[in-house]
Length: 194
Image (cartoon, rainbow, N blue to C red):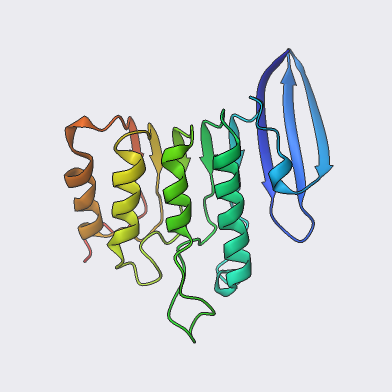
């Protein structure tokens, strides 16, 4: 009988999936080379950690950012038992105007739009530049709060995202007293700065 399943996915040149399945007191580690869409969606995946896959230097490459964004969206779409998703420190919101960056797309918005259709209740988006590279784009943060956090999110960790005072004021105004969120971690941000 399967007690808990955790999946840690390495998103590099060689895609490796390590599935840790705890069966009573025995831990089995299976390493399977695969592509993401064939992950089981049958009740096995409860927690997925896609953290630390895109460095700040790699963030200017639109191909890498698009692949990670699509991978996260596929995971949200195809896994009906996923309760916790971590994709911290991937710089997903880091984009800028061409030619400073090779792209000017906010891949974070695609992920945010997929979240309300998922079963995810705990989300870690720390270190992802949710306010863009200039820390001034409030629309993505407001979209996350409105579409996902207000109705569905129980735990949100958004550490080290450059979230400033104007973005923090959106938390209270959008979430209000009816939000179901139980834990909100906004540490290591830019509170007190405009």
